[in-house]
Length: 253
Ligand SMILES: NC(=O)C1=CN([C@@H]2O[C@H](COP(=O)(O)OP(=O)(O)OC[C@H]3O[C@@H](n4cnc5c(N)ncnc54)[C@H](OP(=O)(O)O)[C@@H]3O)[C@@H](O)[C@H]2O)C=CC1
Ligand SMILES: C[C@H](O)[C@@H]1OC(=O)[C@H](O)[C@@H]1O
Image 1 (tube, protein in one colour):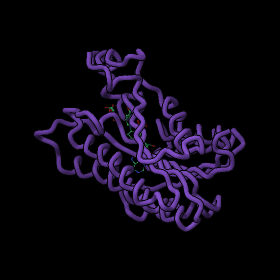
Image 2 (cartoon, protein in one colour; image 1 turned 90 degrees about the vertical axis):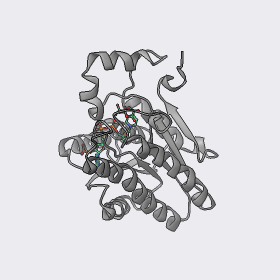
Image 3 (cartoon, protein in one colour; image 1 turned 135 degrees about the vertical axis):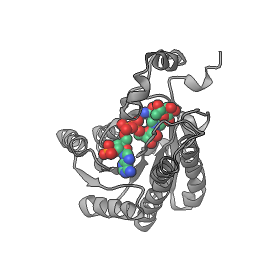
């Protein structure tokens, strides 16, 4: 039990990586507040799975692109569980699109959800942790795409580099409060975000062929690294970025 009686908040936890992280935290003894945007059934299932593990859970609906969502989420978690120990910024979108004719509304929405949303959420969680006075752990779900490009992701990869950079800067800003800030950099993980993209058999084979461990990732592959960074095992880890990509990044030839 690495997170016994800790309170963990996860954004975008109605499915995919966020849901796996939320359930993984509960498996390690945490009570969990999840944020979600539209998937009511997915959020209810996440809550049910956490409660089945004997832990408490709440689901709070909200669009992270709206500034007020951040404080409302933190306030709801504090009202339910009394504190915030760990904050996982995970909510994100990746509407694949070519560069030259990128619609401004797609670019701006992606920035607002992935980067602005992360900023306001992390700020609200950090203020709560500072008020509590006993430190905390903040983890951003960035991406291998913070380090490498994607021709159909020109609006997306800068947001992932952005949240990675945000964790480096907040690690400095919050270190004196005992708040650690780190990011995880997943490779290609099969979730709803890339279902359509990976339905292209040639693309799927190309992506999995690049992975030394021989398979695409599953959401649960992120749960362990996130729980580790959240836990006291990582007490002296801050400003770090952990690739969780089956080795894809280092596979040049
Ligand atoms: N899958 C992958 O290969 C990789 C994913 N990532 C990152 O992981 C994170 C999670 O993605 P993944 O699990 O794959 O994708 P999913 O599409 O499976 O899950 C995305 C989650 O984010 C939520 N979400 C989307 N928009 C908003 C919003 N405006 N406000 C609040 N919640 C929102 C969704 O909620 P709802 O469904 O309720 O709308 C859902 O819970 C993203 O940040 C993504 O960039 C990073 C690297 C690789
Ligand atoms: C959604 C993509 O499949 C996924 O998102 C990322 O951040 C990864 O780099 C993959 O491109």
